[in-house]
Length: 81
Image 1 (cartoon, one colour):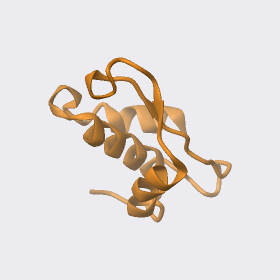
Image 2: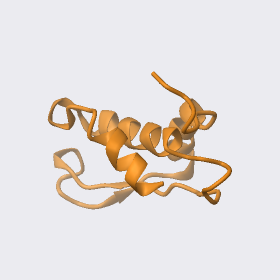
Image 3: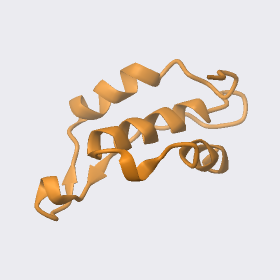
């Protein structure tokens, strides 16, 4: 799954995205790359380090992560944009 996710992420102009956009892109790419027949279920944990966090690592709460997951949890490798 990780190669598929990497390919999906490479489609985005990452330099133009803010932290929330990067998280959104990453979560969407993971779910879009997920093949329920081949891949095992997974749970995302997300952390960020940016100017917005004053250069300190910040782990997103489960509620914050779930707000992204809810948007894309039904995507699979078969979904095409």
